[in-house]
Length: 122
Length: 411
Image 1 (cartoon, rainbow over the protein chains, first blue to last red):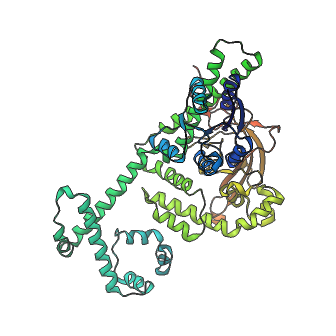
Image 2: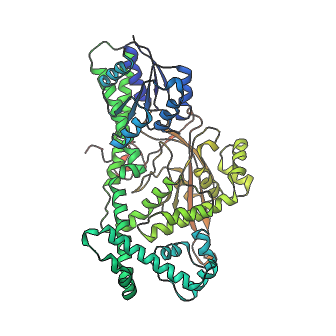
Image 3: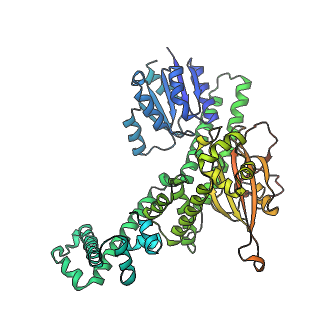
């Protein structure tokens, strides 16, 4: 059963596309663009999954992931990270911080859908 | 005692002190005596210390090239009998280490070059958006006409953005690095160094340490960095952030109002605002700035998200920066719109001001420099006039100020 996704991304057209393809499959999609208040958005929205871009204004996705994991109730919240760079050191850093999946741009709509379903068990 | 303070006490530059510390310069005579006084020691101990450093450097060279099986037990003898050769070994080892570090830096340029990193991010984000929107349109299922229109618009916008970014990348990567290689690199090197330090330093000692600790490819780059640091420190002394921040809260980040209130010059206020952290401003957004000399050559770049100042080649002639050059001492303020993106993020408020100086008095020519502060637009409904970043990558096909065709223009 599709649930709630919080998309933390600042590119408007990417937001629109991801929101469209997930909503079409029954997901409720909330979005947030400001890195500084992203963790507050997680607390408010209580998503079943977070899709988190690495390069955000004012704060990196790595810092946000770190802060999410420091909150006990979000220790096992599934997080899918999106990045333009897929070097092994970037992946290693994300894994150290507790990411569940690391996806490099450009990705396909199918990849996003499959990964969201897999991480949430929907 | 920090290196900068010691240099000041003995009357030499920090850069020269750094050379001495790294065994690139001999010290003797009066200077050695001054150093001994400043360090509260005697000359003989300093000489012995210098020899110890030389032995250490030669030892490091031997260990780094252990495959050559240098006679490490004879090192003391070598340094005593042939000090010049010992200094040569130490110097060459140091240079080899610097070259290796630079090569490592260049090999991982994407990580260390902010322009490349930001450009690649823009390209991949645009491609991702185009791919997703295209797939949605192409999947064959019934799609509401309003959604079709939106995704077509998104593909158009991202295509424009992609073309612009790729053009900038081509220009950046396609530079002639043969004859003027050393001249092209210093400004790049300094801008990278400034980026790493977020264009600010806590005090004079911190600035001197940051200059001294960086591995500079050329003395020109180092001198440029020292000049910037000195200017920054002076600006910070003249108008501390503790004084500026409350004024920004009451008057807004208007450089003319702030200059009037503080008695500082408008360019000085622009420089200050450009390097302040984003949380200093009520809207939480950092500012950017660009400066040029009377020839229109960019002499300072501090980018802001969404407004990339061309690294090489000429900028857009419609920038208020260049209009200010034609009207020195007259403040200009405009809202501009860049091509290729949606409404959000493409509009900027710019304040421009050109200042004249007369370094040679009545006899010499006036020197004019123009400064432009770049801020996110406060009113996205404001009347904005279109500008680009550079003609070569601009999609404004009917621009009367176009100097050359865009690289992607059809024949």
